[in-house]
Length: 140
Image 1 (cartoon, rainbow, N blue to C red):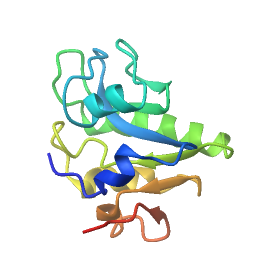
Image 2: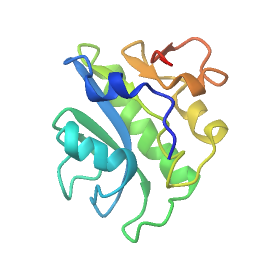
Image 3: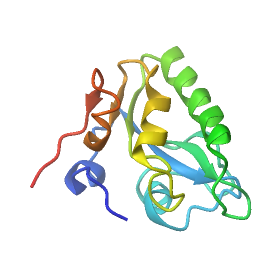
């Protein structure tokens, strides 16, 4: 899985930012960004939705690790956006949720975050769909 965010930023995040990643409803964080969230940000086994440690899980797969329907992902993204918007004191780094192992395209997922408040920063690859948002810096 290719992540456009610099590894330096991921491995040494600003202490006040929460890592937002795609999870599964089984609460297993065994691959990709979910494994990274468990290793570096405090994602907890069996917590598949919401805040845990310094991360926020958005389900993109079901309990059998199959991709959810896009409408289901939209629901969970909506819950995250509502949470972020109602907690302006928190800051979030949103990776390309659902665009790795879950198999969604950027153009399907990125627009779901259009109503996110200014306390959210996004992967630079989503700039075409979120032109007025803040983005993570890419480094060579």
